[in-house]
Length: 640
Image 1 (tube, rainbow, N blue to C red):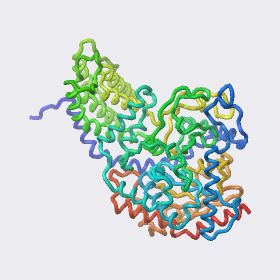
Image 2: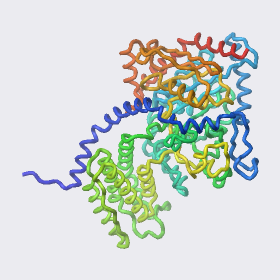
Image 3: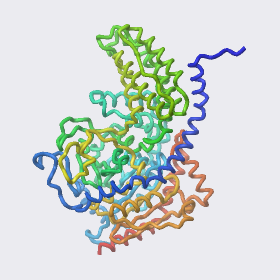
Image 4: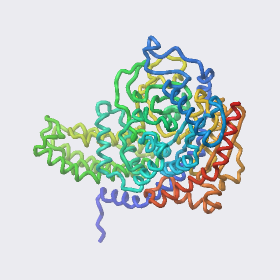
C-alpha cells in the first residue's frame, strides 16, 4: 500500500529530481545566451542613445566651464574632453620608451612620428584570461609589447590584467610573472570559508549603507574567486607610480541604466587615476568612485573598491537572464548548507559567553539556527520552483508553518503574508520575490544576528536583481555638457561591457587618446567577427571614425589568424580571432578547441589545458610578427 507523502517532501523530491539536470542545462544555456547576446548587441544602438551621444561629442576638445559647484574649482568632478594630467604625463614618458623599442626593432622614426598603439583584450571568461596572458608573453618575446601605449580589457581579460598589474613593471619580468600566475591558476581554489569571510567583510563595510551591497559583492567573492583563485584586496590607485615600464591600463564596464533605457552614455572606464564616462568626458578620481556626491561635491566618503570587486564588476556578463538566477540560487543554497554547521557551533559558543557576541543586549534568546536555516533553504527551493514554472504554494505553506514556530519563541512576534498570486508565471515570480523579502526581513528583525542580516540582504539583491550599485558622482549636477539621464539618480548600476560589446573599443576611441593602431585580440565565442562588426556599426551611427569591416562569409566558421581594416581618418584595426585555421586546423579541429574551452564550464582548467591555450593564443602573435611590424611601419608613415 502506497503512503501519501507530505507536501514538503513532494516539493523537495521534485526539486532534487531537477537538480541533476540544472548544471548541464546551465552550461547549454550559457552557450545559447552568449550567442543570443552577440546577435542582439545592436539593441543598444537605438536612436535616442545615438543622438544623445552624438550631441555631447560635437565639440570634443571644448573644455567645459560648468563643473557642478558654484565655482568650477570647487567641483571634485572633471567634465572635460581631455586626458587626465597624470595620464598625459604617463603617455609622454611611454612614447619615449616606445621610440627606443622601435629603434631596437630597426624601425626609424622621429619622436613626433611615434604611433599610439592600443592592445585590446575581449571578454571570454577564463579563456580570455589565459589567452591574453599567452598573447602578451609572445608579444614581449617578439619585442612588440614595449610598443604598446594602452592595454584595455573587458570581462575575462580584466582578470588577466588585474593579475599582471599586481607586479610593478610586470612587462620587464613577464616570464617570472607569467609562471607565478600559471602556478596560481593550476593550484587549489579559494576555500568556501575564505570566500565567505571576504563576503562578510565586504558586507560589513557596506552595512551602514546597505543600498550599496549588491550581487556583484556575492559574484566576486563566490564565483570570480573560482576562476582567479585568489582574493585581491589591493586597489586600482595602488598601481599609481608602479608601472612606468608597462602599458597604461584601462578596465571597462557599462552603465546598466543607460543600456536598459537606451539613453545617456553607457561606456564606462577605470584607470589608476580616474573613473568615468568615456564618450561624455565626465570623470572622478578613482579613489572617489562610489563615494556619495551631490552637485559635483563629495558629501560622504566610501572605501575604494578593491581589485576583486573590480574584477567582479568587469566580469559580470551573467548579470542578465533567467537561467543565471537559477545558477545563483543554487550557489546560495550550496553556501547555506556548507556554512550552517559552522554558524551553529559559533552561535553555541557565543551564547555561552564568547566575547564576540552576535546578539544584541536586548535579545534574551538565541535564534533557532536549525529552523532559520531550514527556512532559508526552503526559500531557495521555492525560488527554484517558480523559475522552472512550478507551483510553489505548498512549499510556501511549509515556510509559513516554520516561521510561526520560530515566532512562538516570543509571542509578540507574528508572521503574516499575502496570498501568492500564481495564476500567471509573471505574477508568481513577483509574488515569490515579495514573499522572500518579507520572510528574510522578518527573520532579520526578530534576531540581531549578523548572518541573518547578510542572508536577508543577499535574498533582497536576488529579488531586485541589483548588480554593481554605486553612488552616482554626477548626481544633481547642473551641467549641460552631461546627458540629463546621468544626473537624475542618486545611484547607478555598473555591469560587464560584454553585455553590449565584447571588446573595449570605446575606451580607446576617445579622440583625445589619438590612437593610430588598434590590435584587437578576440577571444569571443560564436561568430568571431560580431564584435568588430558591431563596433564599426556603432561608430558609424555615433559619427566616430572607424574603418569599414568586410569579411568573407566563409571565414565565419573557418577564420584566418590576421585581419586588417583601414579607413580614412580612422585608426587601423587589426583583428585576431583566438581559434583559427592557422593555429588550430580545419573547421572540425576549431570546433574541438571551442568545446574544450567553453566560456562557462564547471571545472577549472587543468595545467595542461592552461599550457595548451597559452600556446595556441601565442601562435597568433609569433605567426604574425612580420604582419604586425608592417602595420606599425604604415602607422608611422601616416604621421610623416
